Length: 400
Ligand SMILES: NC(=O)c1ccc[n+]([C@@H]2O[C@H](COP(=O)([O-])OP(=O)(O)OC[C@H]3O[C@@H](n4cnc5c(N)ncnc54)[C@H](O)[C@@H]3O)[C@@H](O)[C@H]2O)c1
Image (cartoon, rainbow, N blue to C red; front, side, top):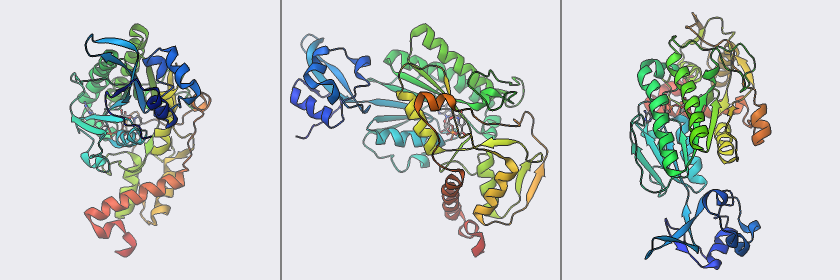
């Protein structure tokens, strides 16, 4: 039997609901939050309610009384709103939640993102794009189940160019999206960052470490915006009972990064592919750890669906490397003979960065799967293709 799912479609037919449950279309995870009807689980058998968070059960309203009828149930697609969805990480999240069967609403003002990142799923029937600056309030019709707040300039080049917009989206944007979560009774996930640890005095960084941040330095606009947004999320959770999650993301890389976003990896890859010297700050002894984007997205998904956990969770790859070693790895992968160009260290540049992911391991059973070599190869292939579109001879330096 084919089960037709449509927005707001309802059914009191137990057979339709049973089939939907067998097909994994009903979500046991959503049941406790959305509906309380013991007769429903008896009718379907709780084991049949497969944990697939793509569809929610809705209570049907009797049109004539506009009142809930205990035995009428509908099935409706889960709706997920992603701010910053046209950015690097946001676009991978949109793609993943479409794969899960959600209806995805992407909200982005394109300050650092691009519609090109949405190309492969822009016309998907369950996808919609709203161009909007989330530092201004946003009203959305209908239910929303999940809000993932990823909007913010994220690379140093971007937030130094847009310091006020960065502070506004971290404060006002977080306030607006939390207001929406409150109105819609949606679960809320904040994209925070390892930058809340600043130039850390504790290594590797655990979530209990409060950080070492210069609020009035150049990076303060980003670091303090994220620290404020974490505080706001916890205040909404404690005051209004919003079901919140906080992910502290460590350096993540992969396709759809911008070559000119100023982060170390696109810098190095762009320079290697163009045959230019690689810019290394200081002696290159500072360390970073790099997480491939599909690993990060898998961790975010797990954190979003884990029950009753509201403290921050680090997600990143603990495989630490010095910047100089990293530059050499990229040169080798790209087959480039570019030299290293040493420049003075910028202000407040963290000396070392490595996540302690014990919490994510224990809570989510998560750890990164993609090795640095594999991730770098995939990303290099992406940048090669990008550069080839612009200038065919540069992408394949050996063919010059
Ligand atoms: N990439 C990383 O390594 C990393 C590390 C830590 C945290 N993060 C966080 O993850 C999120 C996404 O980062 P990214 O690397 O994908 O950056 P990105 O710049 O590619 O994406 C950010 C997106 O947010 C949008 N945006 C910014 N301000 C907005 C506003 N006021 N209203 C609507 N949209 C707005 C931008 O246009 C862009 O599409 C950010 O919140 C960032 O702080 C990223």
